[in-house]
Length: 127
Image (cartoon, rainbow, N blue to C red):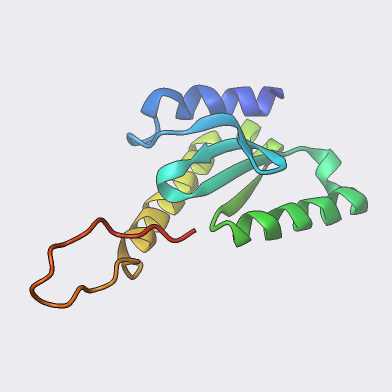
């Protein structure tokens, strides 16, 4: 991990960010996410100056589109913000996690109604 990633990890690991669980270096398809909160389907990427290069910007956009197609939102946080404004970054992350969890919880159910008189069966999982 880079120093900004390590600094952020010390504050979000072990449910330290308002009880939310994060994983670090989480594999997702062809990508490795810096940090991932499964409950919110949220990836957090800490971007250093290398992400300002046009080729890297294009790669990051492709990656974000692929993750969005999987239902994962990507938050990109500048490494200098983690270094200089960590408390603000943590507050922002916590707010986005809460919003995402509320949105996911409010999403329409994927279960289908059964006709009356039939015993319930387990809901199907749509992928």
